[in-house]
Length: 132
Image 1 (cartoon, helix red, strand yellow):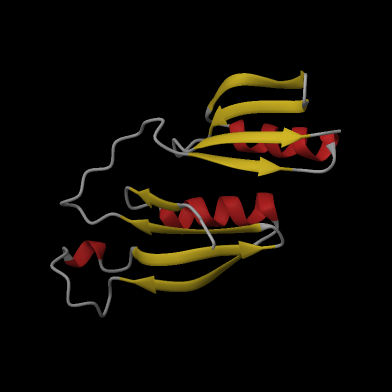
Image 2 (image 1 turned 60 degrees about the horizontal axis):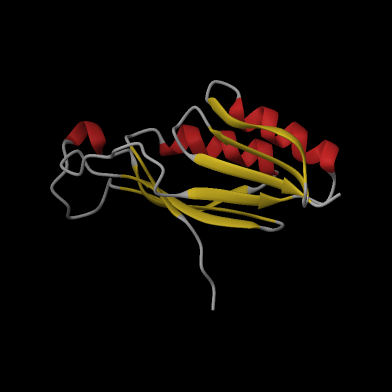
């Protein structure tokens, strides 16, 4: 079994995937736009992503730009959880993810290790953990 996240964006999924690919040292794969699809979307939306995946060591999720007739609401329905072996590396990742976003729980030592929770500049919730 494999469970992974599929993130929906309001037309800026390429920007978000570029951002995440740098933070997680991952590659954007299987990039497909609405260009040649037989879907009723405005011509200005044809270059947006209908599907893409971010893949790297220990990371794999999918993303797309929801068509204009599908409103996206920012909320707390999903959090991406990241486990990092090194607390310094985890804190650096947390700081990058929270830049331009909102910190909900500062990255600090907890009973189980180090933890921080934030929403990034795209409204995606992130939990960053390190057990050392």
